[in-house]
Image 1 (cartoon, helix red, strand yellow):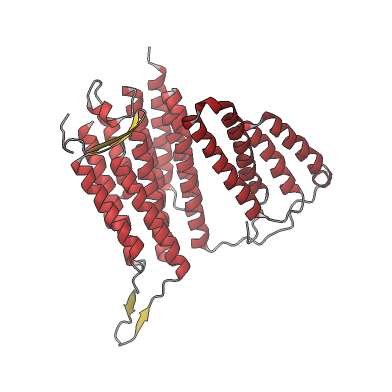
Image 2 (image 1 turned 30 degrees about the vertical axis):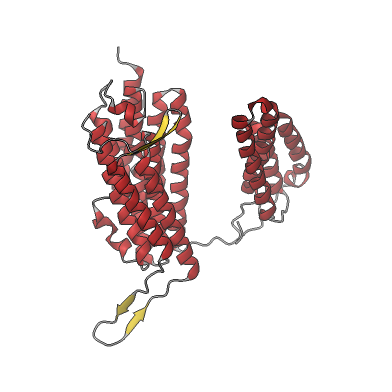
Length: 217
Length: 199
């Protein structure tokens, strides 16, 4: 087992399901925590569009209800990311990853603008399709090895099939689209700065985590 | 002899291929949403193929994730396309005027006798039928409150199991009654869905 995460700092056991933190996942966890706190504390940006060829500009207003919904989704996204960082169970990790996908859609979907909604819809379809490789990979690993616990898989009694790891990684890429942000460019044109940052950050973090899992198991 | 699991896996991968091919060729937004549901079903098939107790427990969260994404996307699609459905008067069928009272009462009583999750489902069916047929005043706050309190009782029952295991019978009764009310309350909401502004 190539131990890229370092030794365990903290292990919380619920029967055979456990949460554990290595220096690597602790760093990712703290990043998610800091950005969640920032999303709670900060106010939404006031986006300004300058009319071309003149001095006029449009100031876009963010309504309170929209701000509340997006803040809630950003916090939920942060919590799901933090859960995915510490989870020691493969299926729990896939559930957290798909929750990140849903909340990412939710963060932008509150903006009632046609092109933003179009982009969110396309991204949502990709996120929904990505549950196939995500859960498929976890189910394949469960079927071949008989366990979903990451430490047990890392012990290497039965080799984890490469196709299982590949499907899992593909699923996370689909859920978070990390690091392929190109498809999210339209979504980032939505106003509301602190909240859209959670989209990219959570995608990046779950991608880094799944790389660690794929190398470890 | 090829093991059953491999055959099932092959069929599931084949179905996934068909679904992805269809999704690639389809351009209409609504049809693409329906096709993603097809892919969700294949996902559940992947989990179900494992065929153990654990897989059975994993199907439910998988299903919940699929359904919640489907609901979120259909809501986005509705807002995106600007669809608003005017409320209509509902069905005008004679049986639906006379039968609901007695049928709902019978189902609710039988549900209480069954108790627990199954009882909640049976009683909930009765309440759905009643709300669906009769005119209803939407008292969502009441249903939500009942559902919330019964959830708390359910959790208390679990704490009794863990902390005071000698009172297990009391906890079983508490959990059975609470889950009955909770499932019934949740299901009864379906009967009030009529596409109005509140629903």
